[in-house]
Length: 499
Ligand SMILES: Cc1ncc(COP(=O)(O)O)c(C=O)c1O
Image 1 (cartoon, rainbow, N blue to C red):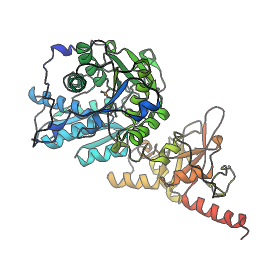
Image 2: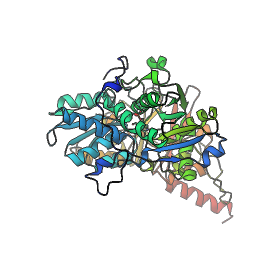
Image 3: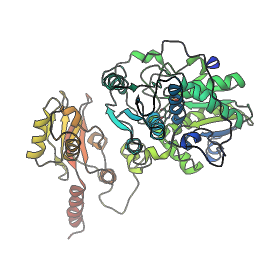
Image 4: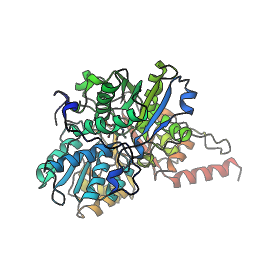
């Protein structure tokens, strides 16, 4: 996959497939037929509360059958590859690196059309996406979130490697495939223009592969040149500021589907009038508002787009029209930002107050006896040794530290058993494969309360306690389980109550 240096596609000259803008056929041939033709819904409460003068509309891409805007490009790429004889049903194997939603779209098309489908996605992406993919019959390969796109470990390079190893494999390659922006040029943009009678003053669209913003941008500018095209890019991504392309450290953010550390060929910077950077907290809080206040059951990047739209639409006057595209649906995030406890654990939301419990607001101290000591092993330990340590310590969790003593993950009995059951019953794989990176921790240097620990234990089997020093080393201090917290608060509670 190239690195954004080639010219953008000439969308006008490519072959077009524009569907009738009416989905109300009595019976549809199959589920792929109902991709697209999503509704545009007026936004009411949020624009009013934010003092917006113009009319704001949501393009509800989360109502696509696979749950996202990416159904459109997945189906379009499959259809075109079939027409060209690149994909042969029953024979070809579809392999794609994705942040999940393109994978779901491809798995949906594969289920209906009969392809084997292998999806390669970073660990950051939600388990809900993985379970949906599996239910659709796709095979999943996870890659480290922190792997830069150019590294051999990245989902892009793993997919390319697999495509060379597996017979009849085809990578449709959403990052370079003109069908990606074309699906939006012919579909999404036509629909927006139809809904608003070719009169749109602003579109606000999250930027991932940038197929949506580039394809919609091109068609809308052709038919409505006054329209301002706004692209939304999270902090930690380089799409808005390509001069950061050579930044060595990859900054991790939680919102899924937007932002990259390289410039995809499917991005046309010339069509974008304005870039707005967004952050996790405001984005995910805005997603929760879209759900609660507007009844739009959308995902995290929808909140990012809405945050940017609220900012950008302040420049529009009464009577003007701003469309914000909501790419995916709540289903992908049921255990993530839809969970209050998850939001609190990430510091995206305050812990609820509880004045009735003596211990709720108590700060966790390093010498509190509810913190159980945790064994730490260096990350170059062999898998066999680490598993023996789990066994000998009768511990359910051990921390793994880098050469500076900073925690880089944990190994747990649960995960190790699961991997063992899913492998061939041996520990021949490197320890790296057994390390869990998604776990919950509290940092003593932030003075966490027992209430905060208790809220995390609502959704996790344990909380790791760490302490960050001045040189940013996160030293593992211990671990707390529900049993530890329960016995601490009941024992101490008896003392407090004089029993
Ligand atoms: C949830 C979500 N939002 C936004 C996007 C960005 O869309 P695009 O790749 O067209 O830029 C994606 C792409 O995968 C996505 O999954």
